[in-house]
Image 1 (cartoon, rainbow, N blue to C red):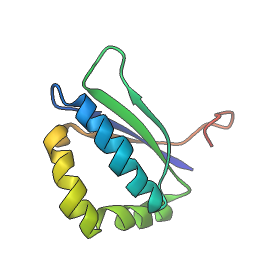
Image 2: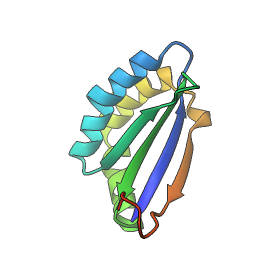
Image 3: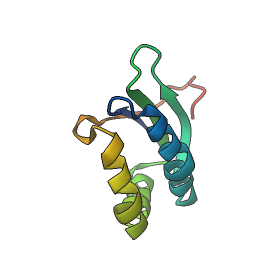
Length: 106
């Protein structure tokens, strides 16, 4: 199992817009393509920080799902331009994680 911990810095004053885009468009689109998203968070002390987790069975599945999402015309032409409006894209941090044996997230 592979988890991605994804940290996004939202542009000042755009968190409501980002949450709406994420919850109403990005999440449903990615899930419809097979992505598993077990958690999403906002930070208590940093009002511009958004963190979420995605889960993959293995690296081959992750590569397949990346293609299924990010190589579509819908992502490139509809969603990605809107993401660029609200996120500091160069600041995105993705950390690959593996759960330990007793982790609830498996």
